Image (cartoon, rainbow, N blue to C red; front, top):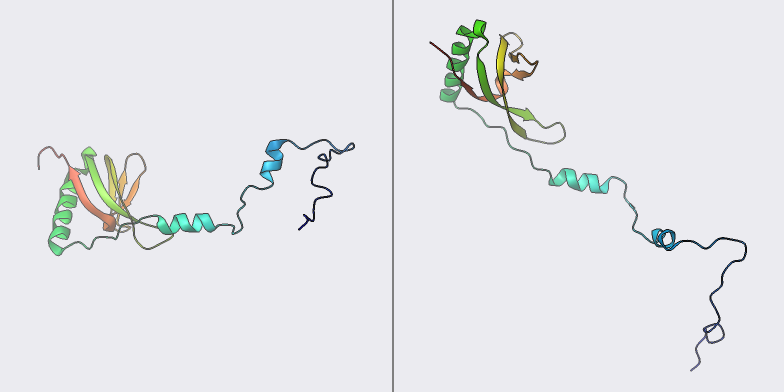
Length: 138
C-alpha cells in the first residue's frame, strides 16, 4: 500500500512571495464559530426569562387598599410619604414583575386611576397590591 500523498508529504510549506503572511489570530478567526441563526440566542434568552403571574386580589384585600387610599386622600395636602408594591405587565410575554416605589404623593387622579408622586412617577391604582404609609393623625 502506498500513500497517495507520498510525493508531496515531505515538501516544504509554501510561502507566497507576493502576499504577506496572515497572522495566527486572523487564521484562527476564519474557523471560529459564527451565528448561523441570527436572533436564535436572543430567542432562547427570552424564553428562559422568568415573569410573575399577576395576583388576583380578594375582595377583602381590595377593601383594605381602598381604605388606605381614602386615608391617603385625607392627608394629600401634606404630600405624605408612601411605599407601594405594584404589578407591571411584561411587554413581550405573559405575566410581568412586581416593583416597589416610594416617595411623596403629589395627587391621586380617580378618573385616570393613577397615583402621582412628586418626582413624576405614575402608578396605575388598579396595579397596586400594597400601600404602606406613615400618616400623622388620622
